[in-house]
Structures are given as structure tokens and as C-alpha cells.
Image (cartoon, rainbow, N blue to C red; front, side, top):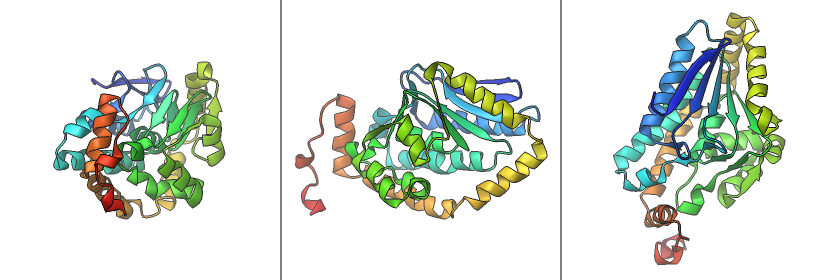
Length: 263
């Protein structure tokens, strides 16, 4: 695999993102991640899954903005389908528990990857955020599940301010299950994964299936709307300006595009 390092040790499948420089998501990287989850599910020797990063200080920066800016509407729709639906299906159908091990910056689509797992274990130095609105697009998938996790009003705060928040706040909100010192993060996650791997596998698989079904909240019906919301936002002049500004490392000039349409 080009963007993912996959290794099985002690009955745990470890998937380490390694798409330098920031683990930005594109179609190829998502294909590898989805294939790795299917591989772990099919392996009878695997009892738990860890998803981590090989890049210091960075779990996943979200969508590759340069590629997004250059993409056709059809390509954007393909990308969102893989991130919002195919990745979710791979996690939904997994017969083993999965843990996202996050350190450094977790943003946008990186939040989607992390939150698709059963649990998130975060470094005490990790930071989280949904900055899409600041580049003229929308974190529409998180409209589906974030209010159910943190509540309507707190979800609106995070999604529409785009602010950055730390691991302790994320744990207090219910986004993160455990927080560990950065130097001990991966080992503590492995200890947790081994504890899950020691459970009776058939009972654990049955219980996990019942749990994910009970908490599905009609995700598949609602996620189609999220894909369309993102695609519609990405087609606006404001999105083109916001993405261009991000790529060019400058502040977006919202006054030059689409201001009258919002009034």
C-alpha cells in the first residue's frame, strides 16, 4: 500500500496513515483505507483494529484542498461517496472493534475518518476542528452524527465557528473516549486493543453488530443529503475563492464573491 502501512501484531491490525506531508485525503488514500478494513475483517487472526498515523504531529488534515480545487463535480461526488458512505460501510460491517489513535491536528475529513471508528483515543496535545466553513465548504456529514454525540447547540458552535479545540474539551464533549500523554499514546491504545482482543470473539462481534445497528440513526438515508450539501457548497464562487485562498496561503476575500446572494 502506498498511503497506508498495514501490520498485524498480537491479534491487532494496525493501519498507519503515511501520506506525507499531512495525510490529506484523496480517492486513492480512501480506497486503501477501505481495503485495509476489509482485509482486517476477513482475517480470522485479527481481533481488533487500530487506525493511527506515521506522521509526527498530524493524524489527518482532511480533504486534499489542491485536488479538490481542481476536481470536477463528478470527481468531488466520488470522493465524498467514498469518505461518507464507503468508509462508513466498511466500519459498519466490521466484525471487530476499531480504535482511532489520534495525535497532532485532526481536521475536517480527518474528523470523519476518526469518528467512523468505535472509539477515539487522543494524545493530550491533539487538536480538533471543523474548519470547512472558513474555506467556503461545509462539513455536511457532521450535521448527521455530531449533534447526536455532543448535542445540537454545541454541535452548531463547533461546525459553524470552525474553531479549534483540544483533547480535554473533546473528551468532555463525548467525542474522545480516552486521553493519554503523547509519548504513551500508541502503547496505551494497544493495551486497550489487546483488552478487547481478549474478549470472546463471536460474542463481541454479535454485540458490536447490535450496538452499531442501535446507533445507526438512519445514517444511510441522511448521508445522501450530506453528500449533496457538500457538493452544492463546493460549486459556489465562495468555495472557489476559499479553496484558492487556502492553497495560496492568503486570507479569502468574501466581499468579492457571492455576498449579495446571502442577503
